[in-house]
Length: 68
Image: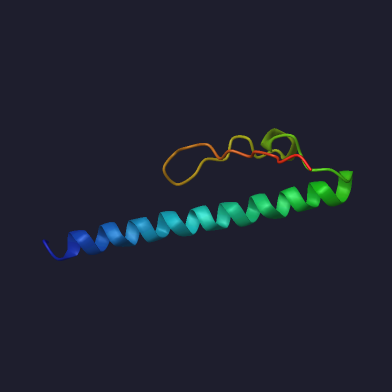
């Protein structure tokens, strides 16, 4: 058990990290699609329908558009 527990925690963290990477790729794809459709970036994640998306630790993603 002492050997298995650290390995399991490492596995869980890797799964969480993979989820976050997949979410970021999804966000990137949807933001690019929005830009190509409307010739501007969205003001917030609600405009692309992903405002309720949370990371693997339960925190909402934040989208901060940069002017320019």
